[in-house]
Length: 562
Image (cartoon, rainbow, N blue to C red; front, side, top):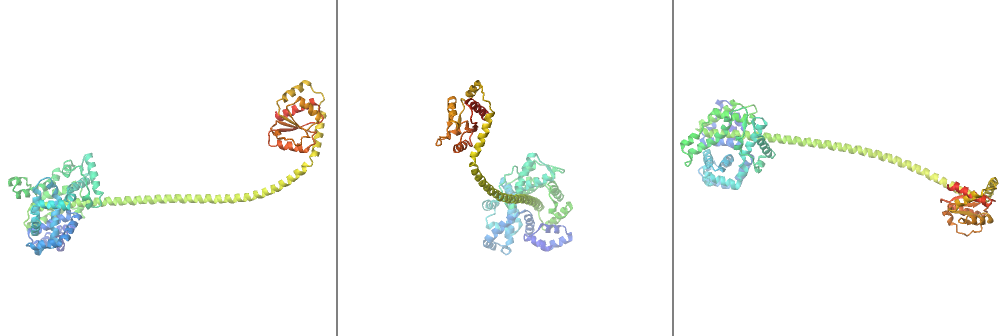
């Protein structure tokens, strides 16, 4: 335990170590106090007490800035300290402690300074000078006898406003958010929306450093926000007491030392008493109201008894060193509040990133499932395409087989066609015999026809044939002469007209071939011309008189042409 307290003096204290010390027996505590603090003066005690506040409340960036400042100016600082009366006590921890004190309390009180109250910075200056002797010499060498110089230095070189200008606002929005989530207070819908928006803008940053850098315009400041809050299940006086009294206590100390302010009687009137029981009660109400986890004091739930034990230990040290009660209470309460806020915020931030991590993992899992589903779909499509390819190949092979069979069939038909053409050629040589049979057939048919024909019916047939485009090929010359008289619009082709152009035949309605025709070449020529045309082809019976022939032509036209 002695070792842990030494660490505290070297600014390496952990709050759990302090709690362990707070819960040991009074006898052990007194022995340790006598060994370590027995010969210590008031300044040494204040140093340890303020270090406790800084260790609990300052962020990592504050410590890093001070380390950088020391490393950069180590030689110069050593010379300044060497010239001072306390040069033997110079070490890195001394300079770091001085800067911790300045920066920590400047962060807390800078907003008050901006409001134009010159007294608050003077109070913090007095606290710094009470911490320990080297601070006074350090201030003198740097021209910081007036605290305004210190403020100007941070404003110009350290961007104090960017680091701490909205520090209390940020803390208050965190508290409001926690309280709303734990149903410890009531806000209007508009205020609840503002708290939610601002808190999530804070929590979305990765570190306190980034939060300090963030240019966040708060809708409502912490003082105005507190005025709009309605608390549940507690006395509002206790809640406002802890916030307002700290400021009044600071003013009380200030007014006792500041000649230009109110007189001492006015200062005493404003200087409210803060008994131990009220400190514990107010701090407990703050914790319960804002839903702050009590685990920041100990893993086990800490109630009034543990807080009282810790406070008693603080007061034991105070009494041993003849400390001012208000100074002790201010540092003690502010330390707990700052640490509680920081701890709860870090817990929320860790929860936020855990939730974010789970969301990312869930999204990755969904993406993997989606990818697997797409891959499975593609595999099915590939399998279907492969099956279609297999079937297409089978069909291709089948078509090849059928093609080979068809080629063989074509070859067979071509051979057969050659035979048929040869047979057809032979058949043409037998056309004379065929004509003989045709004449025989038509002669026989003519014998069956009557020799008497009605004269009126012949005239009617001639009238029907007047518009007919017809050709008569061959025939007896006498009969043809008679036909030309009766049917002059017909075309007549005689057997003797072997060289005549007969292309007009295919443009006629019907061609009559006389069975008397013995010119086979003429017959073949006429037949070839009428192929693949609409021209009808028929025969005339041999040995007919003119009237019977006209009737026969009329009849055949009706049969062929309709």
